[in-house]
Length: 307
Image (cartoon, rainbow, N blue to C red):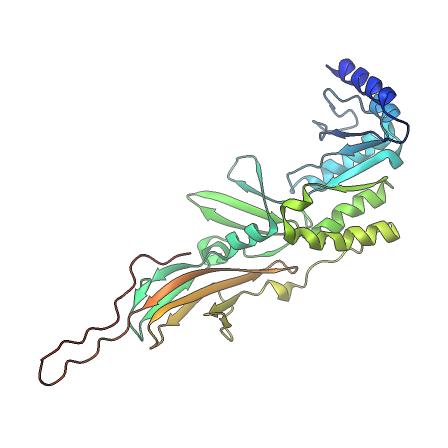
């Protein structure tokens, strides 16, 4: 329906009031090379009718730079560059095995990276017992890559093994967004559009490079400080000094009740923690000499540790 769609846009534009502008969202063309397949979207004809042509980005971050470079070169040959708008997504992306690309938020991706698990001991312990906790999804000995900046994707990334499959995450933040804005700057596009920004309040940091791009025409290209990727363990909200390894041994304190053990990770932009709950049993009070009354200890809360 390529011709029918172009006719529809032409009729629609003719019917619109003069002060109303028309923008058309065009999917990422398929294939590669100079003759990309735009399917039902005749870019040249759409560019003659519409005020703006918004290009949906490639979701696979491993090929984003190369694919979008091809798409841009083709698009600016069909449509005046000042009419082209690059869509910028606040979503982080992931792939499980050979499956397609999925989307999630920056916070959710980092929470997956943290995800502490008990490997030795149990969630219910006595004072003085050791509990070994691991951030398996950032532990190199468990097959994980750890959090780092992917120079090929120009984004913070991490990977781990899950049920025999490789799971890869690419985190969209102000650093990766700036490199995408750099494409719009290189091709002197008309601008960028932020996709579904209201769905993730934490994506507000993307406004920093976007505002810079709007004011100067070029974003500042920075990589996060590698030191910011250091792991942090917290017990009951307090940082544990010197504990930056993916594995942490906690010795249960004398105070009974619930205690939270959290692993905090960072992509150089924000910090996110994931926690589990360990329950320390209170010691039973001793019987009195007359054995007239038995004094029991504090009941142990039921249930497994919550993540």
